[in-house]
Image (cartoon, rainbow, N blue to C red; front, side):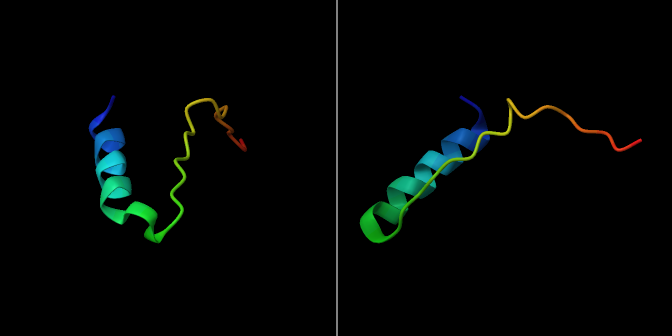
Length: 35
């Protein structure tokens, strides 16, 4: 788990039930170069 993932999980815990939290993972999105 990366530091970014850990911070996101901590933020989710602090927010609690006050908002819906979703994590976006762009690791599987292919790189697109317009050139």
